[in-house]
Image 1 (cartoon, helix red, strand yellow):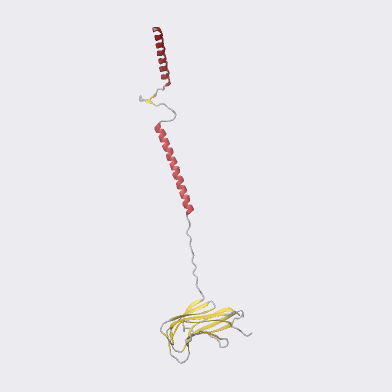
Image 2 (cartoon, one colour; image 1 turned 180 degrees about the vertical axis):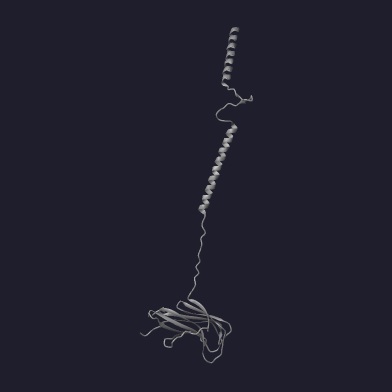
Length: 238
């Protein structure tokens, strides 16, 4: 019995020694440094600190690339959305056929009695407008030159302030302004207002119109605008 126990103990001790010897062979001693210290074994991966630094550097590089991409994209968008300012050229229209004169300054246009025509307003009083006109053939016989004179006719009249008016023939208009007028007479007076010429196609009627802003009382009658209007046509004997 004692022999069996000793045999088992010897086997156990031998097994422990074998395991200790096997474990000691699997460990790798740290290398010694010149200062007497030890150096950690080279695993091929590097220490934890070095790995963290490399990871941080990689993250910084990636962030830099992202910022660069964003800035480049923003620049492209700004260039694309830039709209050049448009310039607008304003063309002012002018009416070359419209002028303004002072009434009774220039002389009436010469009009012959033979070819003369007249257009008169009708206020129901002795105060009216009178247009005298005449048509003259041109050398080509294709057009006609119309001449027209406008008068204010009355017997007695007193106007203390300027009054506006206009004379039109075809698409041509002459504006005029009257001075103060003071007349007292038993006969008809003609006060020259404006005159003008207009060229039109032969055989085509031409419109003549005129307005005088009186806006006062005459012979106990209120009169605002005195007007006349008619289409005229010059006819010639061949």
